[in-house]
Image (cartoon, rainbow, N blue to C red; front, side, top):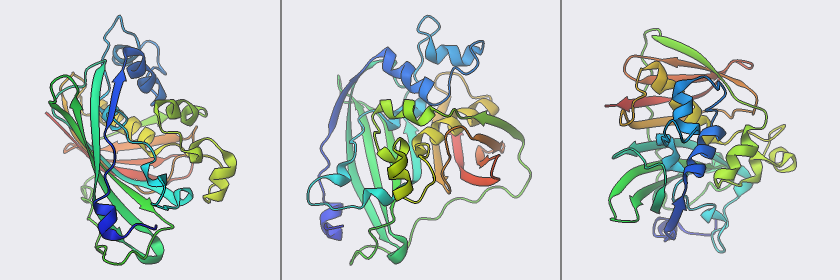
Length: 281
């Protein structure tokens, strides 16, 4: 990366003003697996406007999304080796089914892990464009595997909360679809790592991987249902750390504890892909 540590922290990411419709909210829900059971009443609330419509809380990550600002001239990040490491969403109130929002993203910190790359922490405030009220705060950690060795950057990464030592109270399976990454990219994340086999191989994968934020939504939705928190306004926040990619078509086995802690494992490979905690009202 050509930016210095100080320049990276002070980099001004342009704010994003976005108008979205009920159809956009429905597309997002479909892209994260909602609607696979056409008789499911909870799913219908999010994919058929005559029953809702209701916007999934995790859509806050895509609204006001700044896109691939790391590929702007003068930054020089190696995007072929970029991975999503962590994601957090905190909602102040339920997201409207449609409207206009403003997203402002800023770099919070960078942690140098030398040959393991650079950890980039960012935060986005999502506001209602009409009155400026805060709708949600999202935070992300990206792993820039090709950009380690930044002088002046911190060297200690944030710790992740450990899972309870007791057996989980609930477990369910969630099936991803083979074409899911191709649908999810229509929300605005057009990283070719998720659609172009050549780019995926260049990044070290046999085939395109599912967006981390798609996994984020699938797991978050399943956890909320297992906890019985499906009413509008129940959701407060969710934090998730990704430990391995998911390939479209794989099955996620999701374990959930009473305190909202969870773990997601790809059943076909026996690999833990994510863990974290969801907090509800």
